[in-house]
Length: 358
Image 1 (tube, rainbow, N blue to C red):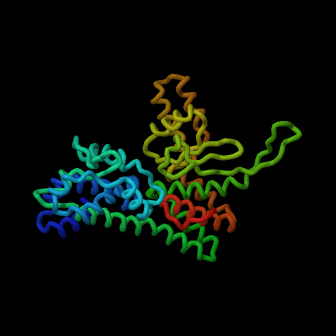
Image 2: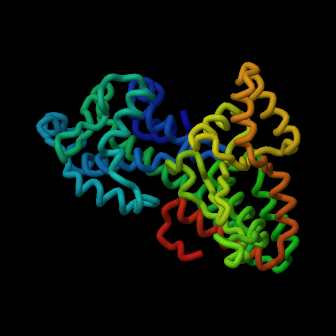
């Protein structure tokens, strides 16, 4: 149990916190979904599911707290009322309605092992199942609502840490100090979305000085500089591709070191089109290449056709080491643009309304 969850339960139910937690599947679910407040958590931010529950809790507490008989007659809150409410919450402006319509119930059943839906869907109306709102005859909705509020406040504090760091880096007049500070953000413990955003910014400005000559005919050949584009947010359904390069159509995927099977899955998703893997590791590029080759050898069972398919699909391995080296080679203008890009894409990732153009 997260410490803040325990504190809130102790406040609402003195001496009964552990018992309430043990018997409340709703509290357990909220607790299990709160991992994103930790710096190295791989858990996604979970705001959509949290806010779907919170929006119903918010109005329930106002209208039905400790009044089970009246609530049993209730048909549910209108979708438009709930949707408008949670779109106005921190980071909620771009959230969709999927959580209300299906995602919470499916994940809730899986995480806490129940055959009951948490959210009752009645046409275009929504309510929380009463069985999850009362434990030992006590209404736990206020405690659950406060847990979500505390989670969001902790998440806000964590989210804004990087923005504060970026502001500090931007104010530095020393280019070498700026490089050092940006480099320090690239670690094996970096949160996935932060690592992806910083990686993109560095790669974008590393490749932008490289050019090729291209044209449909010999007479039309002209020079073009490389441009790197981000496909979407870090948890987007992008088909396994995080960055795309023009004009040569090169694919990049950001990933972890610990699961080479996922590498092959990413390759399969794009039908073995070559991918450059940007890997969150301090292992040498050469060592990773050896490990990948060995994994492919094992996976293929010695079948040459399988080995060749996968080997040809690994265009390049890029580790933290290469990115740190490339960062040192960039000029001051590029470093300032990297800071600006990280700020922009991070704010976009958080659904903050004050991000502007690149």
